[in-house]
Length: 237
Image (cartoon, rainbow, N blue to C red; front, side):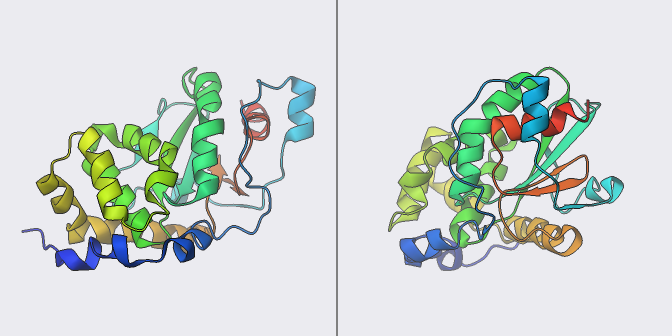
């Protein structure tokens, strides 16, 4: 039988954390390149070469693709030649900028065309980010839809005083009831699994900021523009 945390330990934390303090630690990213990006057009070959960022490290792909405590959430075909593994936090503004501005173009140009696939992994820095990921996981096959909504509405819940009420309002639109919302956020096994995904990313792959991407094993820290990510993918296909 699944053990459940006392409701005050998860739900009350959504109210108790000072919003300003939470937002300051949301990304823990000092790379300086993770500003909000605007979508740009698909780059030419010469533009791609000029915009390709250099990786900051490399990890073993076989180890990286071993499934952890939770089933992988994947966009794209399993046989795509390029695999992007993203570690993100739901309260990270840089992650929201990537998902709102860059990912739609990458999805259209590379994921939907079979050239790349994206595996998203949880790396929450605070209880509000944990709650967001838990709700996405409880959405089952609507995981990415819930993630998209939470990133698009990030300013409406991540930095407000009563995040519980704000998240409940969003969750209701995704089909949650008050009861299923509270059941999700008091699921101690799910919370432990979300934390385990983060711990593995930190311990085994050196993730310490969000977003962090591994593209065919090459590590890139910080949000990437359409041109930058396109350049990296183009060099691998």
